[in-house]
Length: 185
Image (cartoon, rainbow, N blue to C red; front, side):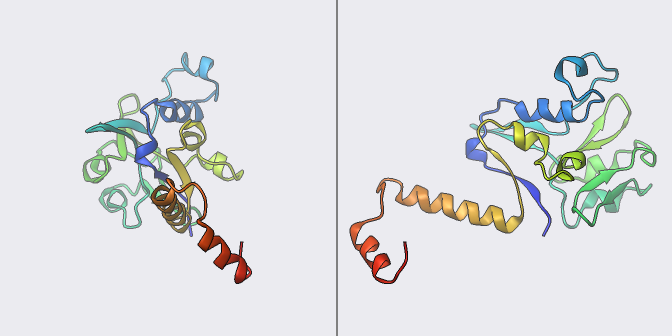
């Protein structure tokens, strides 16, 4: 199963560290100080947006049935079947922005400098080395998680369980006794 970037909305504080990390990762220099003077300036492929009282990182979610791939008349949107990530082939993209129009999540952007589509590519140089995408690594609150859907679902179940019993602080005596009698922890 392929990994994807998931968001824990309740943890995002809107610091935009993910935006900065993404722009640096996609710069030529990979250096914050130098990247600011590059031309064209590197752009983030993730945007921190606001919905009500929440902030969240908005980016391509690499849909299973991706409308951007179907809509692209030039075949510039392609999927890596190895990683599941969807990429923009800049040589094929003609800037018609059909992909931008059909994406239901706003995950594909129109780069004003190149006049071509731009989107999250899951940082293939990093993930090939076993690292998380730059946005995930940069998030100081852990609001972004790089995992398989099963791993993320398990993590969420544990978080909900801990939130529900968090006030207890420890395993009640009767449960601890029962576990010890059956040989568990």
